[in-house]
Amino acid sequence: MGNALDASGKPIFSSTPPQTVVDLQAGVDYTKKYAFRRAGTASARSGLAPGEIWDGLEFYETDTELTFEYDGSGWNRRSPALLAIETANTQTLTSGAYADVVFTGQTPATIGVGLSIVPATGIVTCSLAGLYRIFGAVTFALGGSASTHALAVSINGSTTYSRQASSNASAVAETVDVEAFLQLNANDTVKLRAIQNSGANKVIGAANGYSTQLMVQRLA
Image (cartoon, rainbow, N blue to C red):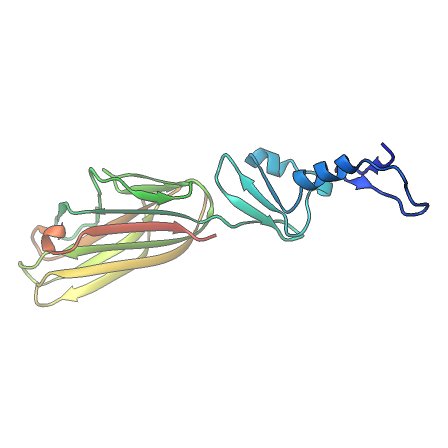
């Protein structure tokens, strides 16, 4: 009563001439509803009208657990996510062929949403597009013939990035790690692949002193 509301529901109070009767509750309701932080589903955020969005508005999506901030021209996601897993199990690699690094029987530690793994295959699914940091480490067993030890990040089962190799002339136990920063699409998959060329089978894993590790982190 006594004042109008604009398209977003904001009370309009006139000072010319001064209003003597206004709906103060409308002002309270508007402040509570909009302020600088809102919460709702992803579809609710995408359905906001122009009058309901302004520079600095923060929106928490209750169904994705992601937080976005509006910068005046678009939404920027602020919520990171992380998946980490390691295993004390050993794994035998044949010579001269890449093998998928697996984490059978292990449970990952996770923060946020959008990352999942099948431990028996070592395949991580990234359900959201974004910039990702990927880190992995394996230890190759000592003994046998001298060989090259290598570890790589594989995307979608075919493309291999950031292969990290070491020529092991003395055939001692050796840890090789790899790190990659990649822009991934929604539902891309990530896994580690290891190779050695000693001419015989060789073991990787914690029997050599260190666990096998994988971490996938969405940065933005």
